[in-house]
Length: 162
Image (tube, rainbow, N blue to C red; front, side, top):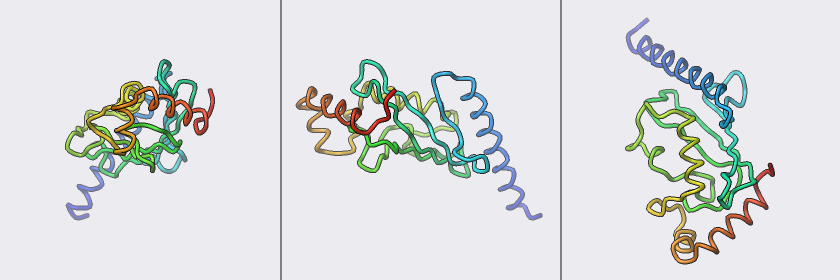
């Protein structure tokens, strides 16, 4: 076996061990629901995010698609909402715009459960410095009541009910 294949196999083994460890830890956590969609692919996950109480998303259940790269945790996962959501930091395709998912902010110490917690916090406190839509950003900055009412309406219309 040449060195490149051996190195790649070792890296993949480390990646798989890390993912398996995270699956076990998430299984012990009662507030986070996440895991592989199918048994034979540990790189594709689904997470369930419960709308935080006190937020316009309260009472809604949102689903996230998580795709782990083969070199995780050295590269960040791609996480998208599959549930349509009205949010300053989520674009129309469901892509989440936030610092830890940015390649330049990513560190291998960040776990999937930590990312889900950060996304949940983002539902309570959107980050106006990272906008996904100029229109939604304008509404957020100039008419917070309208922003929250629209987010609440979309939660009622698109999110699964608790």
